[in-house]
Image (cartoon, rainbow, N blue to C red; front, top):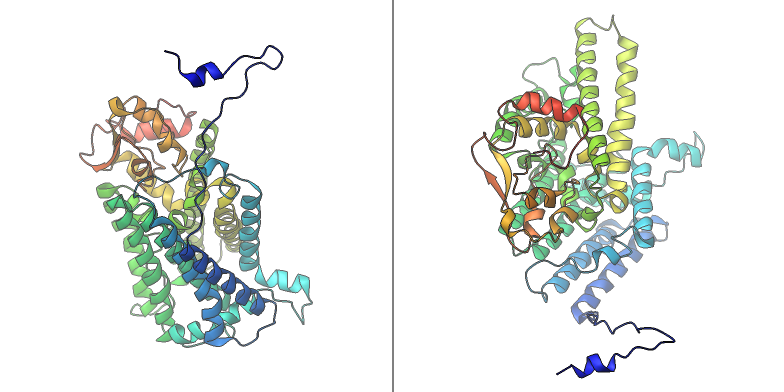
Length: 487
């Protein structure tokens, strides 16, 4: 018997075959809870812009809670209301058709706004003078800095507005931390079926809130030097500059810097050998924390081409060489008391701070999330990632194992790899993934519908073809065009 629907699908010689009816899932309507939390976001946005535009001055705690507080609570609540009615599992429906997540109009607007914020942040004073005069600069960030004055007085003992050179960095730290916490809630709900993601998301939220926000603020409160214990050289490059070390060997800041040096040169290679670069890039680092939480909606935008892989190899190691040379120059200049290369090393330091420390890591690294994916800085420019990647590739116990016989080539793993690794190519041939760029975020495993991928720590040998002579293999890989068949 022929199905009546097939018989009804007749052929018209004039028009040809009609397009068959394709079933589409009905869009889910918003629940009352989602609408309530959206209303909180709208109210928070109105309160925020009212203070920014000067319509509401001296808001104090009420202004802070009404703006940032409602924006944070409303956003987190909206995600809770959205995901709690969905079954635990993979939810990437229509990502490639979303205007916000697929470089559509909304994505471009988001990218422009984020980039504009970072430009204002890093170039606050030149822009203020440009818009006003040298005597009366027009500081566009001043209203936003004033909004966090109550919190700054609580945790630092002084308001942010009065701290002319550092107030906007407290604002940035607060907004940065709030973004990681809010989108961390989203990560908890979105990947609640995966224990690794729950623990990892909790880790980056803890390290950002405690070590990168509260502890540095409390140090200022107790009249000690501000210090970020979760950042080390070469990422926090100034921590190994000679000018940072006080002359008193028992000074508190000098003890802090000893911590940073030990973490850079002792803990980093040891922990990377044991766990791969994921211990830092996906569990501790604030840059990675923002990428894994606030940047998660755009992780699929990373380029998977071999050209991008080739650019990545040269660019990230070039930045590493640049900071190593800069650090060596400054120490040489310090030892010679400025008699050699004094002006050159100072100019070099300023250029590195401008182009790498400000424009690349901040303006491009975060501002371009909606356009190039969430790990632009981590993949192409972070010198800490370069060091970790070299150790991970040359000598580490970490690898992602694949069960190629179970792979159905759906491509989810490659699509959602924020580092641009074509994971599917490895899975199809059953090869371990031991790429220097892999940050061990585990999303490739989380989105795999058949459990093909597994993050493991095992013997540091026989991880990939050529690891019997890992240094020679690394040099060969770094200097030759990349191939999809590399181990």
